[in-house]
Image (cartoon, rainbow, N blue to C red):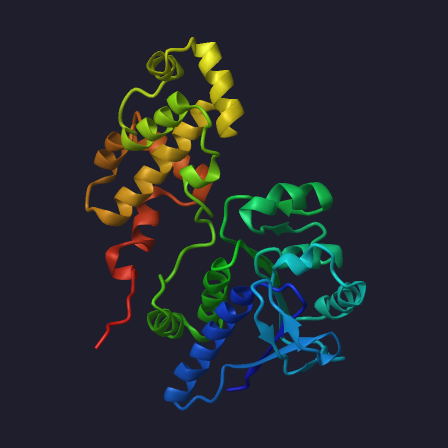
Length: 328
């Protein structure tokens, strides 16, 4: 087996887990190959401008293997971190030249900003950490920024959401290259899921929204989360908050950052996802328990946000798919 060359770019302010997460996946894949007598699946190296050590965003000093090379690897991985906010122009120039020549181009978290700055995401679908999606969309209007998925693969270019999503994307790449068994073995050793689909949402309804400042509205937020199957119309929620429907909708939107209807939709979808993952309830029973008027209404919600039907989501997240490494 000919090893695929992988280069991970380092720079000051890099997020260390954006580097080490995918690195551990590729290293685990090599261990799997070695155990089978197949040689190495990947030849992984790290490089920085001038080959100089870099300081990560958490203060960790990382010494790269080499200077940025004059040749393009098979797979170029660009991590994120606070160092992407004011990137070195020389690094952007190197990415512009060598990124375009790679068979595969990958970013983790805000590493997508470096790819976009180098013109490598023009006309493509991409994602980044949820907190920076709006900024990226405004700064690079020629890139279609998708806010929901944990990773997006558009041809030879793949981008992932924040931090640990880089592991999910790396597992997906390993499964493409070496097969399901290899990716499964790596996931077992890393004690992670195999595997969250790229279409899975980046964050929960509660994380997606702000916490309301006023106590009555915070109570309403928690009420919604605890009772997704109840009447959660604006009128009912407003009555509970002792406000008129118009006052409630305006105040909720201002403090939570989204209209009450959208918040309810997110909570119900998240409740349905968890129920499909954790129980053997049927689709219809799950829909009723989570406040959907029908199974079809829940199916439309899943397809709209996750690009998966409830049945397909359950198949991917059955307990048997949650692989954990046994501890002696």
